[in-house]
Figure 1: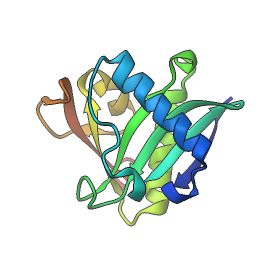
Figure 2: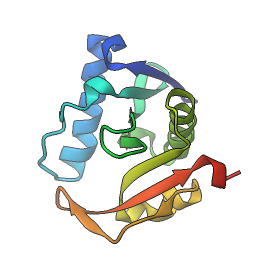
Figure 3: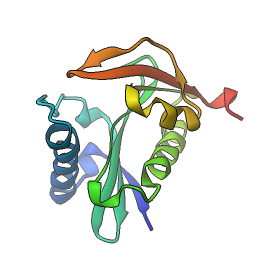
Length: 152
């Protein structure tokens, strides 16, 4: 069972910040063997979604306000810890994030820069591919959009 909460950067405890940065590093730097600067000076203006299984951080994503990365709201740094994969937490996390984006930001459009191999996963959630494949930190990505009004 996973439970989610959403916090602003300033509301994160030191322990929560450490855990989310550790999870992001574990998934994006270590597992994907991708050396990049994760702290990008956007975290301070984002909302942070944390999914806990018991006391352990199992899933994480950040909600990026319109104008910071794209014209629309964005969801990024989506990660599920290896020990918690295959439980459906990825879809639960994304559905929660999509709901939180619509609740916190004044737009019904969400943009993601998705790793290409996850295109089907995001399509099943209502996202539509909007770009050709492009490299981001050496990994093939695609831009995808979600429109709340067109998914009802």
